[in-house]
Amino acid sequence: MRARLLKTALITATLALLTACQGMPMTQSANDSGIDDPMRGAPPITQGLDAQGLQTLLVAELAGRRGQYERAAQGYLDAAERYDSAALSERATLAARFSQQPALFETAARRWHKRAPDAEAPLRLLASLAQQRGDWQAALDSRLALVAQGHPGELASFAEQALTQDADPQPLAIRLRQHLLIADSDAPYAYDAVLATALLEAANGEAAQADSRLAELALTHPELPALWLTRARIAMERGNPTAARRAAQRGLDISPDDTRFLLLLARSELALGRVEAAERQTDRILTQQGEQPELRVGLARLFLEADQPAPARRLLLPLIDDDTTPPVAFLLLGSIAEQQGEIDNALLYYRQVPESDQFLSSRLQAARMLIDANRLADALDFLRLERLRHDDQATDIVSLEVELLDQEGERAAADDVLAEARARHPDDNGLLYMQAMRKFNDGDLEGMEADLRELIERRPDNAMALNALGFTLADMTTRFGEAYELIERAHRLAPDNPAILDSLGWVLHKQGENARALPYLEQAFAMMPDQEIAAHLAEVLWSLERSADARRLVERSLARFEDHPKLTELIQRIPALAPEGLDGNIDPLP
Image (cartoon, rainbow, N blue to C red; front, top):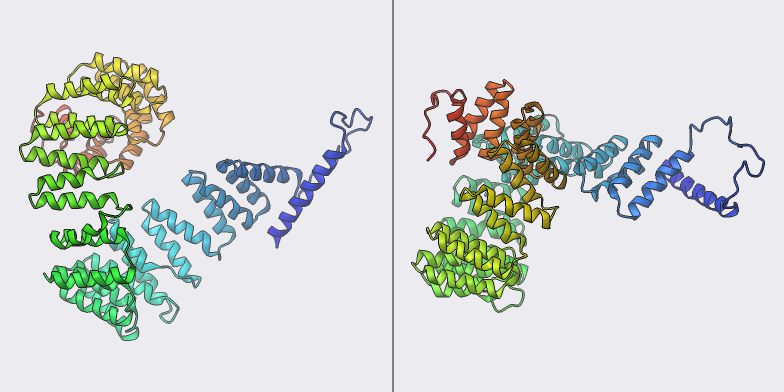
């Protein structure tokens, strides 16, 4: 009701304001007419839609109509605070959703939930946002709050997603067990929490508890499809396809139209080596779901994962005469032909992959296949022809050619390919950047700098070039002020790029500003765990006399990254950073 009154007041006040404005002279003021300010000495408005509130709402509404969603959301948030309105908090959340500002979106959703604690929508939003940032505990708490309000929490589905994304199952299982102790077992969807708990317990190695929980549920809900789906999935994860097949068949008997049981039956049959039985199940899926190209591709992958290329090929071949053939179908058919030694046939399939996400991977796969067959000349001819056929992809194909030639030790030929491409496309910034990086790898820092400065002159907003030059100057020279200016420009253009954040932290370290450097390096490492960023972060921690944190990071990173030249170099410079037992004895860099 209050939201409706606010809306009515807004419309009425706006109309009154517009009417008053239309009836007033455009140039005359109160003083011009000899009338003193009529509002002078009037008490301030403390309730209702005052002038400030009206202005805030009008600005927010206009900003939203102009696509300025961040400004609109902030305006609605301010108005929601002013009038303690859940409706305005909701409107702020809707605007923030399109603002590309995750923090603002979450703030708006939290304030909406605070003002409407019994509303389902803000809780679901908070659960989704927590899940997106990997805060599985917060996501689970929001879902359990939904359950407490009588809404479905979709907990089993949540548990599956958490496990798929490598979340730690133990704390989630503990939280769900706490919930089960106080939950009403007769409440709607109560079984969902039991299934979720069993899934997490099974993933955590608590097989007996999971089995016991599901056995009890089978006594009370024997006709529940989700029960048998969960049992089949757990059995497959444990490597027990016989039990999985039995559970999937029971589920299919209860729910004959549920494709998930057919898919589990196909997986279990394949695991048991019963390929023809698996094909019967996939045929049933296609009959039931209709001829969908993406479905055929997905089922083909199922057979390929089981090392069964023949049925996968049978599933994919009907797609190649269709105008809507998914590009990945050609890629998979090429891979199957390659595995069976049909090199020229595979090449035909790879060449049919259109310009798409799979375009470059298909050309790279084809070239490597030819090289592995001792046909380097054919591989280069193939890439050269593809470069001519696909002018828009020329830069990326040149990159593949150069990389392959370098790997084969044909450095001079790689230089010739790049030079030829630069002559054909002198204005191509990607080729100029590639040339700069090759000069860097050859130790020609002066040449690299010249190329990058030319690129920056062409494209002052090229954050990648700015960062590359700035980092090189910071890492390999003493021109730290110049390096900082370049990297800071890159950071303004791409503030969330982890490579640029790493560069910014590193140049600040070089300038002796370790306290300022630390948060940038921590953010970079959180976004892109990388052995070089780990080495930079560890050195800054060491410089800040946080030696225990630095050693711990080095130890974990050495275990995490198989190839770690920057960490090796760091330990050689600061032997005290070596993990206990290593004592600086690490293979020297070549």
